[in-house]
Image 1: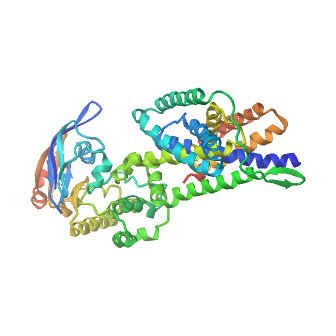
Image 2: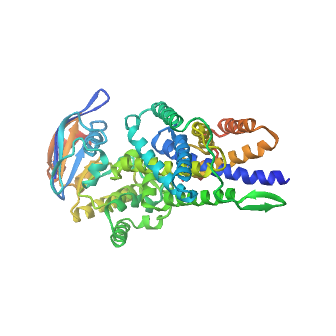
Image 3: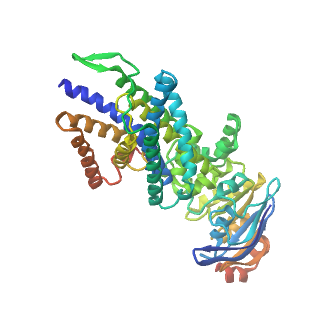
Length: 286
Length: 239
């Protein structure tokens, strides 16, 4: 019973990190018809930025979080301008182009920092006790920070002028343009928002999991599963799906090996695609 | 204010506009009439930049004379040209207020001027005030048409391109739209109005162009045309 309880909290931690990455994927895909296979690399670069700055520049994880998010956001905006030739074209072009970009980024990191895992020490050493179990306070902090960031992004989308613009563009790009909304700038904003959230996920995950060059590829597959379960372009849907997948993997790994637990996520995707191909949370769509 | 000069526009390979020229003066209401499929909507889309012409030019005099032939729609819109499309195309996932805010937040800087602009369009269309927080998809067809007009009115446009605002509306709603068009004239907004409903268009407009198969076949004062029954019958099929 205790293990189940601990794994439920672990699943929430995973789910929050998946949600941070999936938010960007679903925004880009749902609004711009742009499949960003390099989105996981932003997560990876975030983790490396955190490692690089805590080990080599200053020994403060929270400062590294800020520096990492800012620098990866700049890289994300750079990607937006690199991919201009495939923007607005067949989504398959963007898939191929960004897959190439992902390989370039991965190989560059491999060449610069080598294939070995990098370790980051826990930024918070404190432990909680749940039912006699030790539990890392840092994981709770991840859940709280992620929830705050996701809630802020949600409020931004619902209330702010830019959020209204993004939703208008997502529904009818042409008409939004006719209303005078600066569509290229809105695209840049979506890239920036998605990159910042992915970087945040990567940085916060870095002390928990190892930092390695192909970590982005591993996570982006989960992010795509989350987005498809949550419904394309459905922001709240993908948050819900991220938590479901996080829990499925965490609870599954009580009885199964971690790779087998991942199969659970694929089975969930299969079930959703058969029963509700438009995604789990159709009604939630804003 | 708007000068369209001999434009040729294509949809794929079909040559839709075959040399259309027209102009709209400041504060003037100009009707663009014709049967189905002669290129009226395409003319508006070409001006807006949704379907730019292959040949010819489009100029707009706001503060200065600007060649808008190949501007993307959002730049054309930012110069003061607004578009009310045929199928309304309001943002159905957004509420009435959010629909109004799309263009509003772009043009108005202070809270006071935003509220004032919104109050003014609710003055035009009081029904919309009751639907202010309702999603666009829950509005009736008439309310959606009002919202499509209100949404551009709050942006203080200099010229509005209006595509069949009376289509599919009950007669009393057509009256509402006519009233709104007249009030826009009072505010010195120029309108290029595409209509199937020739009677309605002739009542509100100053000048008229009639299109046939991608070219302009007739131009003149609205008052004159209303008296020429044979022209109306020949070019529009109305009596």
